[in-house]
Length: 238
Image (cartoon, rainbow, N blue to C red; front, side, top):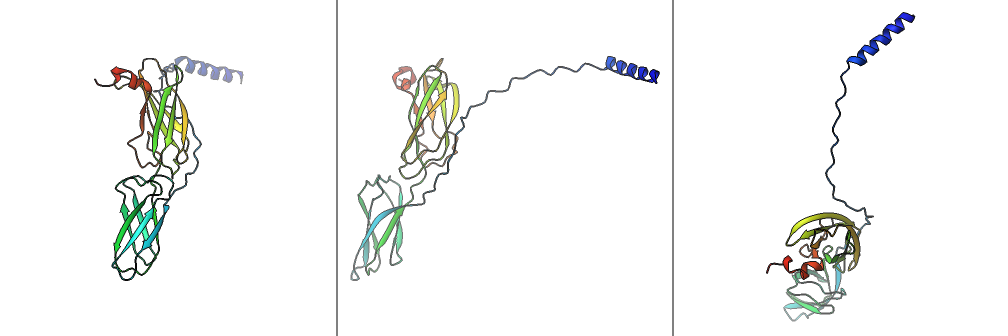
């Protein structure tokens, strides 16, 4: 019994002696990741339509009826907005504003057809949120703040992402970071911070709703630049 144990140990020693050494796997540095700060999203109510004041005029002895639609929504309704109306006698239609409709201003619609006295209702779809960068600036050598507003006075903005970039004039990128932005109330704004160094850069640029994750009606006004861009002559073509 003692001999068998010694023989088994000998085999184990021989196997260990001839086993090839495991090759060392080189360690690789992972690529840098864009940072997205966590946010706590909250549900954003979907606004279907905003009611407007509508009045009708006309009598049975005329061949047309006129609707007077008044902006009672509390804010200017922008040019291009489609306003829809319905009448109590089953008439209906819509119009597209050719200019901004200020609060308490009216727009008139003439509808052909018999009139026998009627009432009407009008409304418009307020669209989606409208993100805009109100300001972006360094607050220290390593930190920047961005103020983002939702310019739509009728619709809350869902959680989104703002991209903050440091650049050299004119537009050479130095660094970039994505920061999560919580939901913004209708007509409201919020301020977020971003870790981005000032060294080697001339100015900052911020892009609201950079990933397009939040519904938005106007994406042409999402970019803002820090004051250094305007004060540094080398940042703008001469």
